[in-house]
Amino acid sequence: MTLNRRSFLKGVAALLPTPVFAQGTGPRVVVIGGGFAGASVARFLKRANPKINVTLVEPNQTFTSCPFSNHVIIGLRDLRAQQFGYDRIAAEGVTLVFVAATAVDAGKRSVTLANGTSLAYDRLVMAPGVDIDWKALPGYNQNAGDVMPHAWKAGGQTLLLRAQLEAMDDGGKVLMSSPATPVRCPTAIYERASLIAYYLKSKKPKSKLIILDSKDTFSQQRNFQNAWKELYPDHLEWVSLSQGGNLASVQVETRTLVTDFDSFEADVANVIPPQKAAAIAQAAGVADRTGWCPVEPLSFESQLVPNIHVIGDAAMTGAMPKAAFAANAQAKVCAVAIAALLAGQKPPEPRLINTCYSFVAPDYGISFAEVFRPANGILVDVEGSGGSSATDAPPAARKLEADYAEGWFKTITTEVFG
Image (cartoon, rainbow, N blue to C red; front, side, top):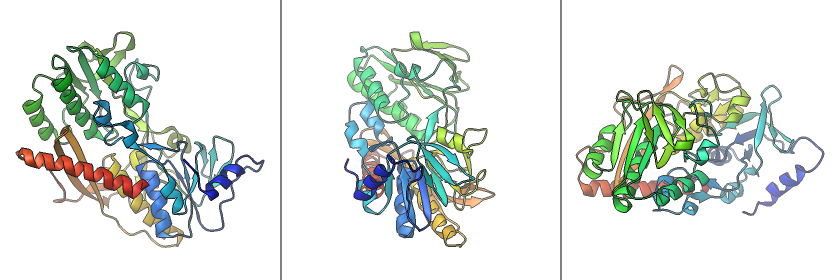
């Protein structure tokens, strides 16, 4: 990817002895994280007030999208279709710094980068996403992920899980684990299970997938389970929390998943472990003992550290789930709020919408939509708003929802990166 001239000069500055980047004379907003949340807020901040100096800090020059990565796992999509650059964001006047952020000094209002330089800010937006909580599941560490991939961050793990499924003999057993909430994009777990079951039914009909779940209920449960009963009665089994599905530990050498009451040996194991806000959020002090970042719902300003805003998967917002559409919606609200705060004004009270599409098969989609408002320091559902796919919808409607999902992905990625 080719950097614009301004970004190039910033990179040159990093090689000089001075410890601080020159950032201009207007209000300075630094954004950490270039995913759906961070890229969106950087772009919308410049649109809200072009005089704001916006610097986007992201270690990777290419973003790899998690939405639709389940299609990559079963061979229906190339990983390159999930990848997006930042040229259009730079073209709108956002300064790009492709270096990891390593520390935040809230007192000095500065961000330290991996190359030792620093960025000053008037307001900081943190959109770092999630990290795997490597201490939460006994036996599952970073090395275990090379054998029992989580694939919950799109990229190499996605391709590893795909390769393992392709190499498995017909008749092999696939195990998935689903952690307790909160978790990034909770319905994507059951979409993945559905699409893997589709793959097994199509390519390896003697094989079966078993989901070991740390929950008894999940979003869109009736729609998913009705579809499983119809499409995959011999290829997918769901073991709930009350049925003994809670994953207690793993044994990597034998690909064994141990629950509270039993153990299951897999040919392919997709372990999705507990998660938490990314390490930089922990280091900045904006995460509490839950591992997530409580925020004030009008502006997404941290409840723990002033002048820092947290959006996207790392934020703890109340009822709003951790999803790409939610991250994009939060970014827009946050951008408007920061522009108002920098102008000495009170942020307006927002209404936020989230829409999630899921695939049960390539031509079978389901969805739900929700509306949220601030109340009592969190975001709550607006009573009577939103809705989900009908449980008795005909095949034509399911196909139409799958088409809508394709359109949604093209729209949001174009808005954020295109």
